[in-house]
Image 1 (cartoon, rainbow, N blue to C red):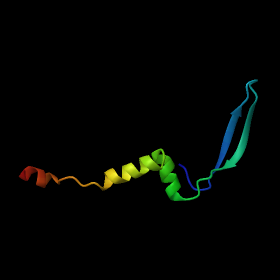
Image 2 (cartoon, rainbow, N blue to C red; image 1 turned 90 degrees about the vertical axis):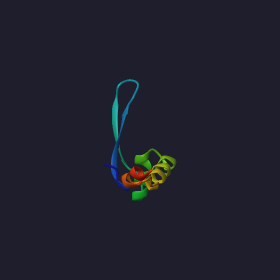
Image 3 (tube, helix red, strand yellow; image 1 turned 60 degrees about the vertical axis):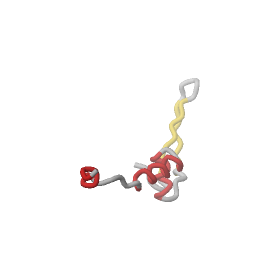
Image 4 (cartoon, rainbow, N blue to C red; image 1 turned 135 degrees about the vertical axis):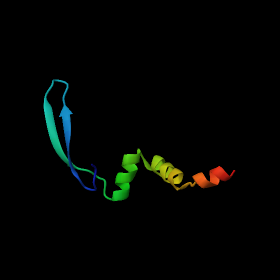
Length: 65
């Protein structure tokens, strides 16, 4: 799972087949940035939030119509 400022490793494979590993620190600084990245970006995150906050009729309301 991703987290703010989490350590990670970059694995590089060169054309000639040589492999390297470079330690990194993720530049995800806040939990909201983790949510943006997990959703695929800011726009998908906002759209998911808008859809989640839309309320449709309850099953009882639907049965009355």
